[in-house]
Image 1 (cartoon, rainbow, N blue to C red):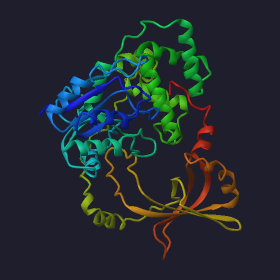
Image 2: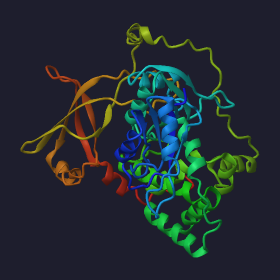
Image 3: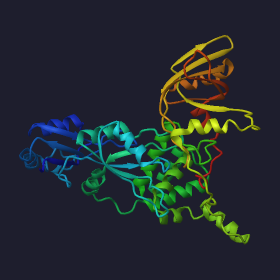
Image 4: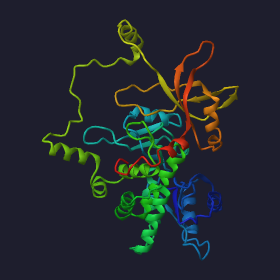
Length: 434
């Protein structure tokens, strides 16, 4: 039944409620979805709607297509959506390769029934960082977009992207109004300077990289990457591959742009990439680049279900000792009690899925209570920074299980915040290391 409509050229200042009211003047609107821009949160200029019948949908097209709001805006576009169905197909991006298909589908199963899931593979058999998923109903798909788009998968990982798979194709066809073929060099240079300032880059090398990215990938795409970078920074930043420090704002931008652009474009913009340097150094020394594959050993698979028995067997071995156990707690405290020389914090949260290397089983997700003890002197240095609701407390310390107290305790030895930590490393990153 052809009851699903695509609406385009919606004026930016026109709210979703106004669009729905316009459609409701024709007949019952069963479902309405208007995506939002990831970088600003503002509504897009296109939307999808499902009316109560095919006759009403056709009537809406007859009456509202080419509807003129005023002389400042182009006429409205109302037509049947290409798929002729209410949207249930979703596109996922920024899916970590360490996450299995089962883990991704389980995440969406908490929102609604999943009918189909497909995640393409690379040539080496590794999963891609994007996937396609079909929910059981338009309502479940809408809820999945609202709930999981931008979902935090863990520290150091990009937030999950969830959108209707038909959005890009429909939008590109109707929203691609003719643009000037070439901007003036002056305006071009001004844009490069503006983006460099947003990213905190002043050296000529990263500034020239920004200019090459605009030339090869376009202004709109570059600005989208900048917006995504700033959003990641607001959420706490992104760790480098070694996970021992955070990237600078410019480092995040170069990283996500590298990951998103086609390989042939990336090689033109970043010709001296790290792997290329290693190959040249190995060739100069008469050596072949080291293989990324470890030697094949006859290891027995780890029996996760019976891990307790395996650990008990390992405990019979002697000779080793633990010299130190430290953890890093990142988040915002639920409660704070300031004592004479010490501050006690509590955090009650569900653990989010974090970056786990390939081969390590996924940790269980459970509610827990974390009690943190920090020196009053250290707390005084971060108390002002935590007035920013977007900042997060970062505590490194020793962990212990205390009797007669739920959860676990952390005895802090280093206390800072995400914003203070980023400021500390602001000048230590480079675009080539991205």
